[in-house]
Length: 147
Image 1 (cartoon, rainbow, N blue to C red):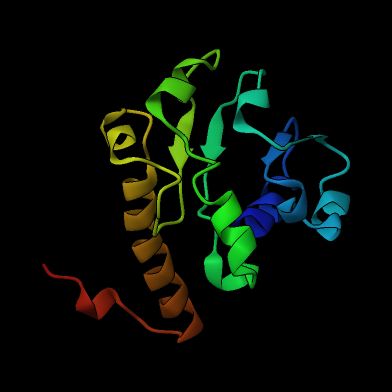
Image 2: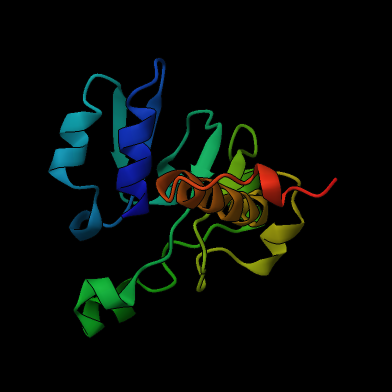
């Protein structure tokens, strides 16, 4: 779900190139591809296929609960792991984002990289949700601010 939502948002901007990396049976949905078709779009089946300079790498976990096929999950599990070694093979190490929680697709060793932004991303998400709830509930928070 999050790659689709992010794609819809980014499609509103100019000069965006999308690289979708997933096994053939889990590639981004056709309706999303249609939405981003006015941009440059590449589909890959392996992380190692990305040769272009990538600014942001948005990683998601393989969602066992959404897959519905235990055999397929076991077959694919561990095949899409973003390691420090893999990142060093890119032209430059991109910013790394992840909606969390993670399973095994993003080893803890990546956390130490300055490009790892997923914990900051999670923290920012708290503030965004608080702001959205405040707006939706039409709350006046000025009286809640400390002096």
